[in-house]
Image 1 (cartoon, helix red, strand yellow):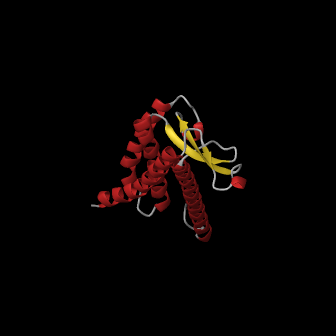
Image 2 (tube, rainbow, N blue to C red):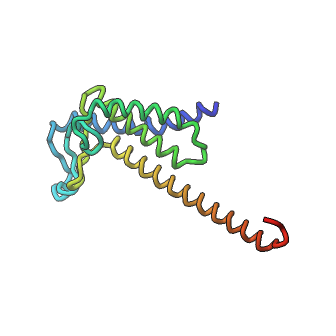
Image 3 (cartoon, rainbow, N blue to C red):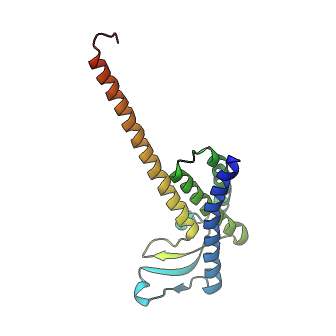
Length: 179
């Protein structure tokens, strides 16, 4: 029963992201011609706009000829997350959120690759590469995972230092005992 609950949480997070990603891509594909740009305010256009773009590579337009490779990688990553997720303790909320976001992003772009070939990108900020909700979800999930791991490592180091300090203090307090 606990695995069912674990998977329900994972699929709730990732499913929400996939649904939002696919919905926004559908709007773009049906509202803008390929290459067409739209911004709600003319003054905002240099900084933030929507542009209908096809991406055959990885997130943010990296490796433009790697579509098939990224399709395979997305399947492997999704399978690994689905396998590994129940092993993460429930109290590690940040890890679980991060993996759910990464799974949602991977599946969102995987759907595009299978259904259309290229991935639909549409968010354009300044001179940064055009991206989509799935790309943002993968990147945000990765950032959350890195920060959570860093925090856990710091906590572990502090606990080890405190334990070592306490052990040293006990040795000083009890000089009669052999080491």
